[in-house]
Every structure is written in C-alpha cells, then in structure tokens.
Image (cartoon, rainbow, N blue to C red; front, top):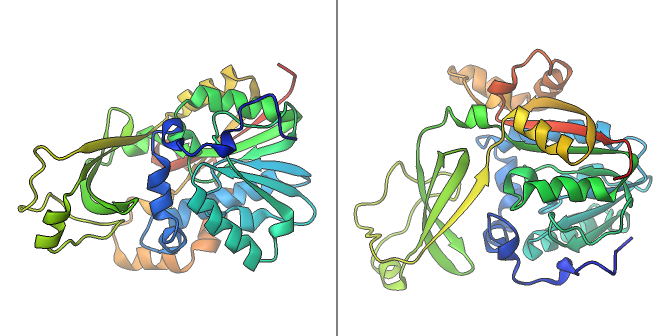
Length: 322
C-alpha cells in the first residue's frame, strides 16, 4: 500500500509547513477535543454528526478506505469494523495518540491503521483505496486544496468514491463578530482574535509574555472568550502568528473536484439547525433530539438551501484512470 518512492511524510516533525493551521494548534486541542465536539452548545454537535450519516452511506461495501484528517478518530470509531479496514491519517501526533486510545478502548485497533501524514502528499501508491473520506472540513484546512483533490483521486481505485465536508462561504459571510480568547499552544499562551474576512476564517495569535501572565488573571474559554480585547493587554511589539482556514462556495468545490478528474459530484447541506433559531425552547428541543432531527435533515437535504448550511458535504466518483 505504501509508496516507497514517495517522501515519507508520516515521519515529518516540522508539519507546521503543510497546513494553514500548524500541527501545534491541533496538538494543543487533542486532550479536550472530544469533549468540545460533544458539547451541545458547540455547532459541531450537529454538523459532525450529520456528516457521519453521509459517511456511513459512502462506506457501505467498502473493503479499504482512507480517512483524511482523522484527528482523535471520532469519526473513525463510528465507522470502523472487521468487514472494512480504514487507514486514518492526520498530521497531529497528539490527536492520533488520543485516537489510538479511543480505538483500543472500543476494541477496534485491529481494524484501523493510523499514519502521521500530510493530506496533500499522501504516502500511498496509486489506486489503493475504494473510498476516501473525511469529517472535519479538511478541505478548508488544506494548504494546497488542488493537491488534496488530485491526491485523493490518485489513490482511489477506478469507480472509487470520495466524501468530505468543507466550510460554506455563503454561511460564513453572515457571521461578522470577532471572537477574542486565550489559547495554550505548545506550553505557550497566546491571545487569539478570530474573525471571518475575504473568504477565510482568520486567527491572529499574539504570544503573551510570562510576566504578563503572572500579573493578570487569564480568563476566557477555548471555545468562547470575550467580545473584545482585555483592557490591560498591550499587543504592540508582541510576537504574532497568523493561521487561517478557507471557505468555499458550492461552485468552487465542484470546480476543484472536477478539475481533479472526479465525476457525479453532489453536495448536501450540514448544520442548518445551528443558525437562525431564536426561541430558547426550540433550541433546547433540537439539542435534546439531535439524532432524530439530523436524520430528518439528511432525508430532506435537497429541500434545505445550500446557502443556509454552515458546512457542506460533497460526494464524487472516480470513473477513469488519469
């Protein structure tokens, strides 16, 4: 399966070079990511679950599938079975370590191979897999989306199927507010401002000096924070980094996959229930009945508008050799 003539990307340590978000960001999230996704107040609670419904359909009769950006294997553990093997890759070592523990606890370690690798330079031979899938908007986080699409096409068998999700540009344009918070990255504290601008989800991180940390009380949840910068924090002169993810319009995603050689491209809205609900009692009902409500959305997907979706799930086929 592994292509020994291609670079062994799974061995790289300097993986901050291969994505808009550096590996250290995801490493820092590994210990709390599962609890975050399971939090009913976090939008992922809906659209991750909905993506898994489509992935379950995609993997029907699969014998060997490749998962891109597996993270802590939240999706992997839902779909792994003795009837169909999964090779799950991610560029965050700590995320995969958490995923390995999860698979071991579920008794699924023998059904899944975990590989530290770059989703844009897959270390596998041509025509390896009958499915390639992803849950977690890997397309939006890919440093080279064209390469991601072409590499996915390359490793798929003829008549193989692709399924992945991405951040929807139309929905993102409706979100104007800035989120300010503190994040711990590789044992260093950053003050981070997150906002949507020019088709990207941008994050600017300022490294906070240790003496500042010692003299002030640091507050603000990782997925929460404040509406504005704390008055006592001075940003001038602080080392800064910038990370971003890319939003795609449905037409852009279609064009990208078509140019890589994919056919029969279909798109499905995800997360329509996470925005626009004003009455608290309706919101509580949706959260308490997510599984049934999400299954209804999947069945009625063509009725929901793509421009209302937070994320979009796209499927496609490989029909011929390139």
